[in-house]
Length: 217
Image 1 (cartoon, rainbow, N blue to C red):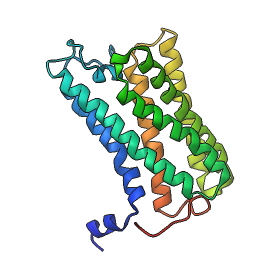
Image 2 (image 1 turned 30 degrees about the horizontal axis):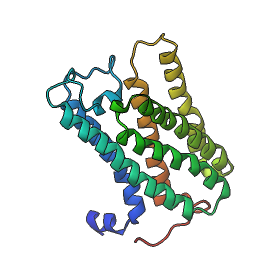
Image 3 (image 1 turned 90 degrees about the vertical axis):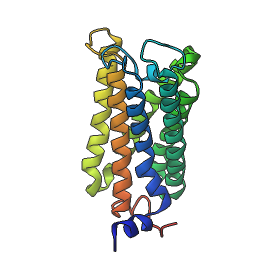
Image 4 (image 1 turned 180 degrees about the vertical axis):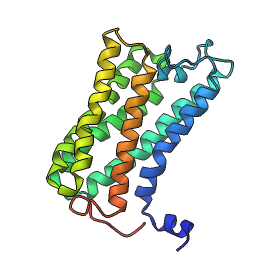
């Protein structure tokens, strides 16, 4: 079977689970390229989504459209994936763990819709996203610990969010050398990798007690 045939044989939701986060990553990179004034140690990632500020570069409007669109599209795609996972899982504990993931993805979509231009509203949807995603990681990590072959993943799911918590606490305490962008990208990237691993585990048939494999659609 060729590579293209193997890809075609993968279930549509699984493809979305793999490709969805890539859209956000690509759009963030493009937005940074279009915003030469962006500084990881000065700015927040949300600054890339501000439509009217002029200090980050001459193509800021285009960069903001790319950035916000990427968050919205990725949020919608991964929301579809999370709902598919929720409906397909046979494990009640997993369902409980996926619910805060769905909520966090709704917050992610809201971050793209209510950009930094919306002031306090943008702040609260951002807080909502960065607060709810670790909860999902912890709940899933605790819930899957009873599966011996998944314990390495569970331990990672329980530990990794604390890295983000430490970085955010350090930033909010005013003792860090970075601005918001660093803890934001660390949190976002850990979330993306976590979702990719879950998707890969399912694709490899490692979650049969949680989400039975089905025919490609």
